[in-house]
Length: 160
Image 1 (cartoon, rainbow, N blue to C red):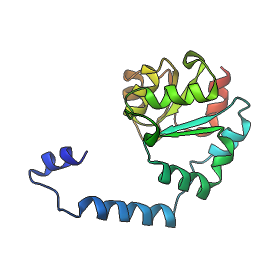
Image 2 (image 1 turned 90 degrees about the horizontal axis):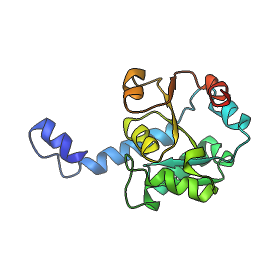
Image 3 (image 1 turned 45 degrees about the horizontal axis):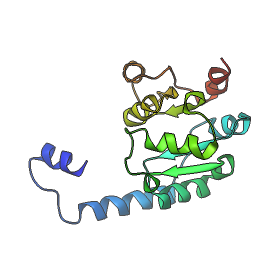
Image 4 (image 1 turned 180 degrees about the vertical axis):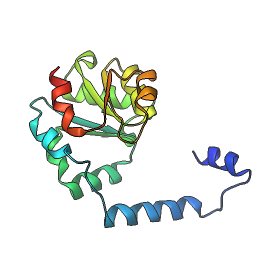
C-alpha cells in the first residue's frame, strides 16, 4: 500500500509517514471505536462456533476485541501474524476453519472488503458481503453469495 501511495503521489512518502499514520490510528481507536449497529445481537444470536480472521496484527485485534467486549463471542481469533499470506489469499480463513474443526465448505464468511471477499471465495466458503460502505454490485462480482447493509439482517440470511 505504501508503494501504491508513492506511485499516486509521484514521490516518496516522508520517512516518518508510517509512524505518523500508526500513531493517529491508535489514538483514534483508543478514543472512539464504535460498533456496527446490531453486531452484538447477531453474535449473541449465533449458536455455531465462531472465529474472526483479520489482516490486522495480533495487538490490534486483541485491543479491539477487548475494548468492544466482542472477544467473548469468538472461540478462535486468527490474524495476519498467524499466516504466511494475508487476504486476499485464503490462508486466514482456512486456518480459522481448521482451528474450529470445520470443513471450509461448511463455513460462512461475513466480509466488507474486496480482499476479504476474495479470500473467503478462494477458501471455498460462502461469503456474505456487508455492503454498508462498499458497492454491493462489486461485492457480488468478487464472488459474494449475497449482500446486506443492515447487520440486523444477517441472522435471517444465514438461516436462509
